[in-house]
Length: 407
Image 1: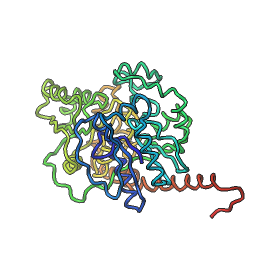
Image 2 (image 1 turned 135 degrees about the horizontal axis):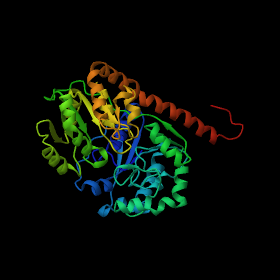
Image 3 (image 1 turned 90 degrees about the vertical axis):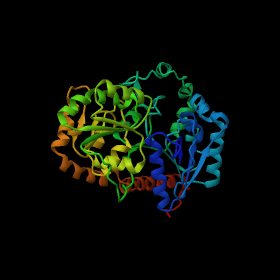
Image 4 (image 1 turned 45 degrees about the vertical axis):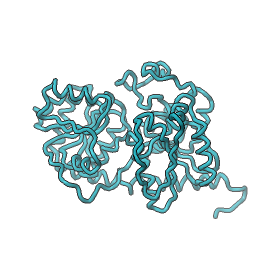
């Protein structure tokens, strides 16, 4: 596997998915190697944590002086140290399958096939068709017409001219099949690129058997980065009216560029008695907060693909209220479409939360069922194994000599 980030050197849920998948495959007897970028993490976070154990998985962190490989990959589409390391790993491990994930700061050049392995790519975001990876223009509008160079300049980032070169297109053509966690994302990418794709929803492992009480009650919870595209500012603006209507408090779990602004708005809106900002919390407390919450609210402005926290909430029987952006409606529809709201319609968030309260017990049962049937490790790996079996057989057939019988 290849992934720009891999825990503990990670920022978002895409890297967590890679770890979950790698460890589940290792538990089932597969030999799993993961190439990831220390350089990318040091650029984003500066402070490097101690390497955590990844059960049964061989990790190959990529580091260069001054984190140059990450900058080189962004500007030129690839970094020679990364490409050489990838080629060496392929030669040494002789993989049957190479599964790429977020390779934005490893570079597209490793998407090119180096032997006869099955070449997979999971699109955790819109990077293949969007330099910003989020399909947004000016921070909150979904991009409908590509103008990537001007958009990049607006974000104060250098243009990625390699996106217009034949090498990038040829690398994409080397992908045997793209895995999309949502039909929405699959449709967006296949509309722009001639690539075979399949939808397999993401998964999260079974929650811990014992979850201690969180000591909170009667609240909604927000979990995620404190950034404008996640909708946290709109949520705070709407929450005073929502709290008066529902009587629910709000717990905010997360951090980000808007942390100070969020704290200031809580004070300006006089929400101190009903909103608490907890920052990031450890996994045990997060599961406790999710389980004890009346509901999880995901107010995204960006077209979120498949937030893992929504699946974690379902795994502990907590319902989710979310915006009508990206792949969120597909997840929420496994419970009830009425849990989806639109920021374009005044009062729609209040309507969705009201529906949650009126149907709380029934939705809790549906949450457990939706998790087991759609978002558990067993559900994912059943679809994944079927995909691998089908395409590995196809690759073998393609390589078979004329008139050679089936084995």
